[in-house]
Every structure is written in structure tokens, then in C-alpha cells.
Amino acid sequence: MSSYHIEPLDRGYNREILDILRSAPNVSERITLCFDRRPDFFALPDVRYDPYQYYGYFRDNDLKGFCGLGYHPGILNGSAQAVFHMRDYYVLPESRGIGFGLKVTENFYRETYDNANTGYVVILEGNKASLSYIGRRNPSFP
Image (cartoon, rainbow, N blue to C red; front, side, top):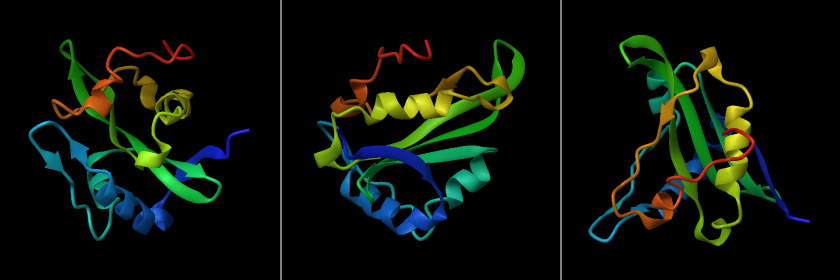
């Protein structure tokens, strides 16, 4: 049985989230980026999204990764509606490749805010780890 589990995150995990953010930068062939969100990781989603949710990927009681989903107004095909933005997907190297991405989408998509069924993700060109998700679908939420 796996010792990994997923649970919601709040500001109580700010220090651990910032540590993971610094230790798991976005890497491509030509550039490595680490976004400094100190001192409060949640300051950005507080002003950008309404609502938002972050989930953590835990091994036993240690946070090994996290991902967020935030909702905001958008225009799709000329119509104003809520859209979602999946962001801040970071997993420590020792916990990669064992299913966090697929499992966390089930948590995010189980309920949608304002019936938002369209969203987006921004990936650094050349980031092979993240690019591997393009075209993959969670069969539970096609």
C-alpha cells in the first residue's frame, strides 16, 4: 500500500511550499526558473483568483508536492464565463512519476466552480517533465 496521500493545503503549509518551490525549479534546455514567492506563497492567488484551492501530495506526513487551481472571469468564444487556471505544479524529485498529476485532477474536477469546464495551464517550452502531460486525460473526467 502506498504511503502517499493528497489533502487540501492552507497557509499553515507556507514554509514547506516555499521550500519545495525553491528546490524544484522549472527546467528547460536553455533556462532554469525558480519563482520567488516569499514571504507569503498565497499572496498571488489571493489577488488573482476567486475561489482557488491547493492540494498537497504527502508521503506519510511530509509534504512532497503541491498544485493549485484558481478560477477567474474569462471570455470564451465571445461569451463571459468562469475559467480555471491550473498552476504551481511542483513535486520533489523523489516523489515524481508515481501518479500525483492524475490523482490531483480528480480532486480538482470532482466539483467545478460556476460550472467552469474550460481552463488552461502554462508550461515552459522545453520543460520535459511538464510537457509529458500534454494530451493526457484522466478517464474519470474526460
